[in-house]
Length: 238
Image (cartoon, rainbow, N blue to C red; front, top):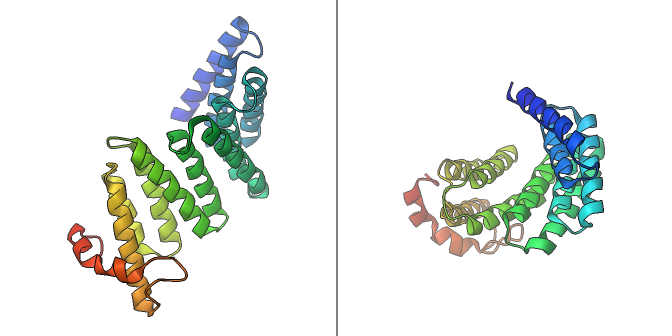
């Protein structure tokens, strides 16, 4: 399939460039990393890990620890470890290291920072830490919504990941909101999503008979519930 074709292309590229470049050339690290990502998707985790560690070693020696390419290798290792429950703690450490480097390099509002938040969200969802996973996904979503000026595959992806999370924990109304936004992932959808999400939470809290400000969510349920009627025009709360 397509993964096999990609693997063959990267292996050929690695062979050609290995004959032309020094062993620790950054371009070789790039090829190691790309090949590692393909093997990770194929489930060949042991070789993927070796390739990413080789890329990491080259990048640290070339650029030092605080470099975006180094963060990319840490994030890639995090993805490999995320597929192995016994190594989830290592995965978390890799993603947090990548996040720290990216924030230091780019600042808070950058797509690469959003990428790390999304990876952490996926890992935490696997671990059953749903509330923290939701925060990571929503942080990723907010950054992407502020950065991108048009319809974005990255925005759609985060909306879908949030939808999967909400489905998993039985918050079907919010899952529907997220999936609907994924189908039309303009940056403006973020505010709509947050507004309707809050109204949905408020509706749930009021149905439970909780206080105007919910202790569990921190949502001002009276204010949010008052906005629910106008949000119905979007068809989310029907």
